[in-house]
Image (cartoon, rainbow, N blue to C red; front, top):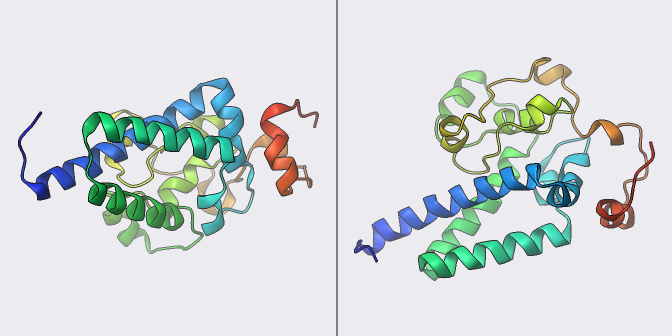
Length: 187
């Protein structure tokens, strides 16, 4: 419905898809059934690149279907989808990595993109920190919607990663992770 050049349509499509992923992430934290699926991503107590790919298959399916709906509604081009997915997966690995960048570089990068330190706060066991920094690619959404938290209360070196109810659990193999959303856990 809007006449844009191919390049601008590509850029706006990528930005809109990123906002949709931010919104979806926020919703997955706030709708109980969706949180039960998403908590699989947060159980990991040793955040690294693999954490960026650790999602329950049903969450992946729901995410895929939601993206499909918005792609059709918005008329997003195949090239925009391809570029967005490359960026999303690349930055998900980057911002879930355990690399430590100099604070000066992190401070500049997080103006635009989600850095590992910024996203690590989101994986804190402290619920006030867990419910912040939902962005995957662009960091601006957290600032715009008031979900940005610059640093964890205990600092990055002393913060505890994961979910409290799974801190003492040793049984987080694949088969257990697949059924956790559907069972009551007694810990």
